[in-house]
Each structure stands twice: as structure tokens, then as C-alpha cells.
Length: 185
Image (cartoon, rainbow, N blue to C red; front, top):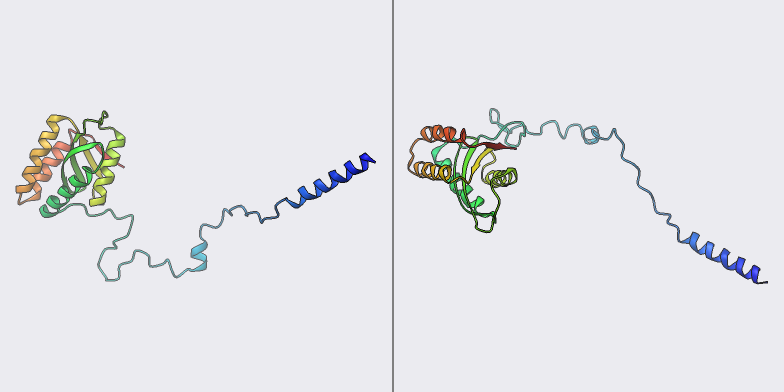
């Protein structure tokens, strides 16, 4: 008699466990041929992406076209100052000096006393990211914390403040950038 009750109890337990099994829908695996789905559904919607509304004007959101960079002395002054302020927001940086022309920015750094590191690829990438928040056209940064080079960048920054022509400053930036490794992403 005990065996029957035990068997009955096991059957009830098995029925209860079977009732707890999930019957939720399972997700289908992604199909490899779905990449052009939007184009096949809406073929006319993506034909004019990046085309300028006015004839002769360049498209502004074209990822294949590089941004213009810094082309005037006024832009160089304003953007260099804004880049200094953006870089100084990094917790590792106490002070920064920036001279930006064309697609390159020279950056001299003075680190905080708590920061025990140096200018490495991580720091260069962080500086480039900050610089590009100000000007997307800048694609390379020459970053240094060496006293002699930082002093030269400071002098060049002062020259930029008084400059009337960007070509002389650009030549000095290119010359100094050859002494510092330019980081590009």
C-alpha cells in the first residue's frame, strides 16, 4: 500500500514539474541575408543621403569627406583656447597649452601631482578625443609633457595670439610636430 501512495506522490510531483516548464517563444537566429533589408523595403528613401540641397555646395554629413580643419588665424586662436579648456578638464591634467592649425594640434601638458603616469597612447587618445569635441577636422595631436617642448609650445601659443597670418604659425607647428610623435586614430 505504501508503494502505491509513493508512486502516486511521484506522479503528482512529476505532473507539477511538467507544468512549470516554459512554453515561451524562442527567438529565431539572425538571418545572414538581412543586411539590405531597409533598401529592399524603402528603395527611394536612402538614394539621396548626403546630397546637398543646393547645387554646388558640399555635403556636410559625408563620412568619406574629411572635415576642413582650421584654416584661418581667428579659428586657430579661438579653437586652440577652447581645446586648452577641454583638455584641462581631464583629471590628470593641471595645465595645457594648445596650438592648432589645419588638421594637427600641438599639445603641451603639465600633469597634476597625483598623476604618476606619462604621455602614453591612452593619454594621447584622451587628448585627441577632447580636441575633436572642439574641432572634428583635427585628426592628429602631438602631445608632450617634456619641459623644453612644452615651453616651445607655450611660446608658439603666444605667437598665435599676436599673429595676423596663419601661414607662419603653421610652418612652426609643422616643424615642432616633427619632433613630437603625432597621434592619429
